[in-house]
Image (cartoon, rainbow, N blue to C red; front, side, top):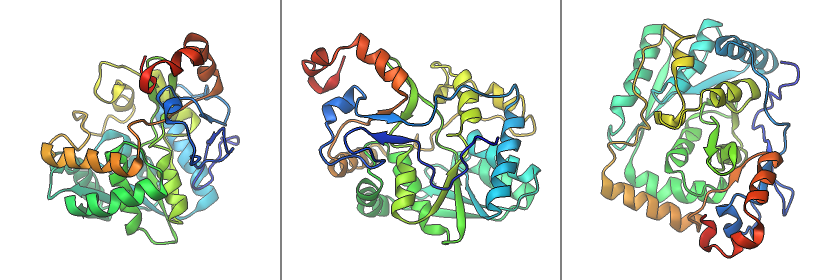
Amino acid sequence: MESIDFSLNRTYWKYEKNQSIWRPNDYDWDFAGVHRGVEVIVPEYKKRSNSLLHDMKSLVTSFHKIHNGEYVITMSGGIDSEIVAETFYRLNIPFRVLIQRLFKGANDYDIMYAVKFCKERSIPYKIIGLSFDKFVKDLIPDACTYGEFSASYSQIALTNLYNYVTDSEIIIFSGHNPDFDSYIGIGWNEDSPNLVKQAIAKKKKFFTFTSLEPIFCHYAANFDPNQPGMKDNEFIYSEFPNLPRRKKFTGWEHINQDQLFDIIEQVNLYSKTLFTPFITWPKFKTKFDERFPLKKIHQTKNGSI
């Protein structure tokens, strides 16, 4: 794991116009529709062992040797955040947990797994209630301004948890799993890395293991577009058989549709776009450019193909 970058608030992309992690003010949103103008700057991910559990333990051990910090792991009730917490627990590394409860319990069916996990292991946890009014009036404008979020209201909601960690604590998320574009290939929708931008802007200490090479590759190898979350979770459950199987949820399934419409409208208002840039390696961008020349894209409204 010597070559892995364990820096807090780790960045791995840049925008071509300003050579920065921050989106340029004159970013061409037509290009965003076809995913030009931003790229991953670390070498293409290729390496993983035969064991997700082995790689998770190696990463967490190396990370802890470097930082030896006060850790706060965010848990949604999903299996992705649970394997991070389980790895810390098996390695006897202390941490506390934050669990976000949406709109008076709209995601209670999901977060019950996180609560059960913590209670069974005597791990300190805190449930953070997020109201609809706070989300719409405070979080969305703040996240679109400081984190440059452009579309994902679920990722925007997570920024609320930054308000519940101290300056000395390291907050750990698990939401940087690979995204897939049917025309381009593998990478990230920009709103995942925007969690890093928000942490930098708010001077918080942030880390995620699922954006690192071996874990990203495990997830990519189990890509399945027919499964919820676009991956077959059997590779997780086979190595963490003690963790209860569950149906994949987003936590937003039971949100009132009128509220959801208002949320999307507010995000579009403050982000000033209907697009989300797709961040990937130059190799995939080149293949896309060869298939869809720039002239053709310019002639296609909003970059649709």
